[in-house]
Length: 116
Image (cartoon, rainbow, N blue to C red; front, side, top):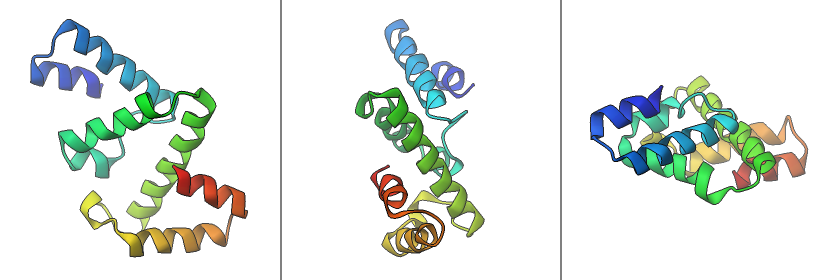
């Protein structure tokens, strides 16, 4: 698992090991077996921001799951459209995604995806 790799590579303390495992459990709870490939490829800082968002910022389990699904859908959409690097995500890409969502989902569902 990703948390074991991080722990081995970084020589992390016992306290931090528990935080990493808890963070990984919460991101799994959000529907992720691992960070999306664009996040993982963007480096350690991007990975930690991703984990932090789904652990420290979203306390409600149902919200975490809904936002996790929305974020996963966005990154799946990006990959399907040839956008594999986080650096390539910009306002034009997001606008294209919103346009696509608007053709498939209700306005409240689109808003939820954007909130995530």
